[in-house]
Length: 214
Image (tube, rainbow, N blue to C red; front, side, top):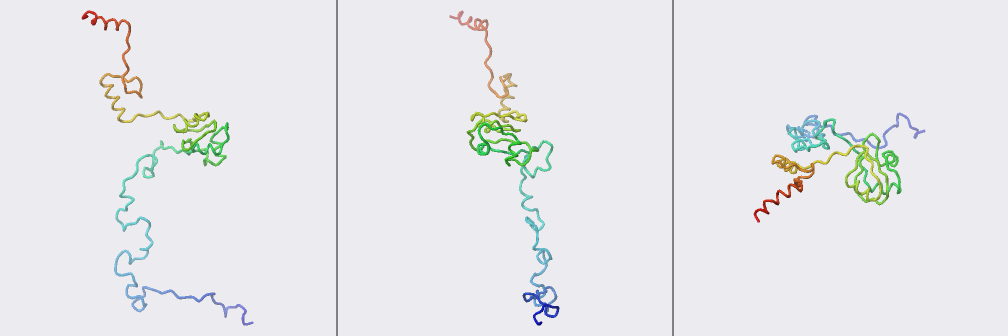
């Protein structure tokens, strides 16, 4: 049979086209330098496969720009042992995924797919609105989330202690100047000096000179 496939009539489905072999001298049809020009980076092998951001060996742009500071910046790596990671869940997600009166715990959030795992702390954030009464238990709460949950009649249970509020540098300087002047604030968050306590005896002594002058 003439149409039977065998080694004598075996051939590819499409005609093969031989590639142009460059760099084989002046007789190759591509000239002396095979279209690469004279010397330089682009005349070398692999010159068109450079990594992103490569600028020819000079200091690249991403290294010339200033680095972002803080524990949340990748430029700050490696960071110390005080860096913490939290999984954020907004109150609008609690509104849509839980029924009124439900107990919201990290385990319940994990069961609904709102968090990835139970090894990382959970922080409830205040984006969105909530109208259901929920008993929410998490590691941390933002101030807005706490207000919204309690305003809806729910309860908030923090598994970790909330950090103490810090005053601004300006308020700390004002308090330091008042302490140096002998004015002691009534509380760490109050920079106004308290009014001096008065007694009936002190009031009588203060009024005595006025009566004599009269």
